Length: 168
Image 1 (cartoon, rainbow, N blue to C red):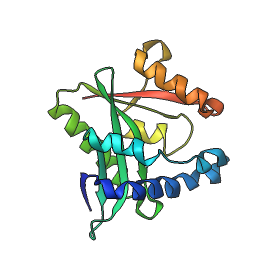
Image 2 (image 1 turned 90 degrees about the vertical axis):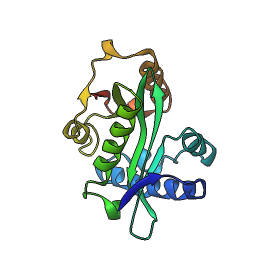
Image 3 (image 1 turned 30 degrees about the vertical axis):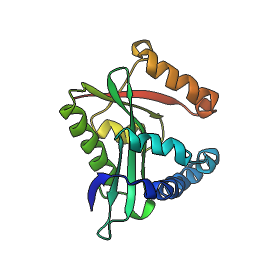
């Protein structure tokens, strides 16, 4: 497997990966998350155009995981990282996060941020193992506050969520 930039013709594959990865939320009593639709193709294309969308591709060069990021308050913010269940638990997601960290360092970006579910094992506890720390709400930047407000408006605050930070 290798990491590379996503190609425009692969954007529907990213949606399929996210749908498949989301099904595990059904098993922990979060069917609404499993049923939530991935970002539209136009929105995914924006990440591609910004150079902030990567995939892990298998030996046949077919994407099995992806990560998209935004610039938020001077940091790179992980907007979405999804790994197809057939490729999960092999370090694929961690590889994408490390790729983003390397990219951020090369651009002089001081940190990575993300928002996630606090109590889902493959969310906040996983990101802690990847070097992220939970941020206190009083330390949130304006951009992170705006992201959290959008998430709350989308109904994601039905389950505990946190912002996380990884200094580079």
